[in-house]
Image (cartoon, rainbow, N blue to C red; front, side):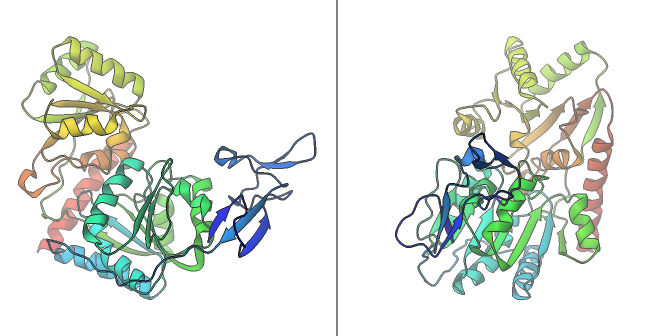
Length: 405
């Protein structure tokens, strides 16, 4: 169902928006009473004021029945097919599943068959992606392959979901749904802002039906999910190789001896003929790094969450109009460039977690014709996260070799 704060026609349900103890829009308990005795929810206030003088109106979301089909100009590999079958089995048995697949394995395509089955059973299907840039890319792929399906992409500034059979959405947009989805797939489940965010987890839970099937995906897996898997509360499947079956590129470490050493190394690195993503831990460091490169004759650009022309910057890099793109963790996942290297500046910064480093390493060697490349971590100290990321990548390569035998 869809939830609205205004009445339109006759709703299926009407509930009080906020009570003394709970908000029915976000299921939060962070309730504040003002001097007039009115109760407000503080957790979801940014979505619009909500208080106990208001009501939530719930309406059935009409979805047209049709026969759905997929058109693809390539076939899944054996490993991709096994992952696809894993999802179908979880769905058929109404079980929660977690797919861990290395960067570049083709996770999105592995979901196609289970989505197709659910759609042809006239089920309501949602696909959650934490970041808008990645959502837009995945939306294009679904539109290309699900040629008969009405698909909606929901994010801030784009909330049109009328007649959509398949809803692609950021987790924030789940606040407008109530017991809506029969199948919900959550991609990059360990990515910001969804990871370790109880508010967004509540929204997703609220948007799913009681017996809905939840399918999680990521290249990395955190301790909370590992515990649930070990207790057999969640089913688990691993895809340790990319579609081209080449090994993942293993990060190398290099210590920063001095500011001059860092500056000289950075200029030399960026003057090579290969394109590079230079990852920095903060926006301020990114701005300074970009200015430094320009002062030293390196043609570079800088991109972050605050960049207003993100699409243009990325497209120019794809067109090889310049060789160096300085970036925050904005580009740690969800983007593919054909043939690049990656450099992490100040890799010992706390923002570069094990999961983040693995995702950044996954930008290298994604395509079969460009499976080589390098990922270098520049730091004063070698952190536990750096060691753990390299160890995990080596483990995946070993698992890939075992499956190839």
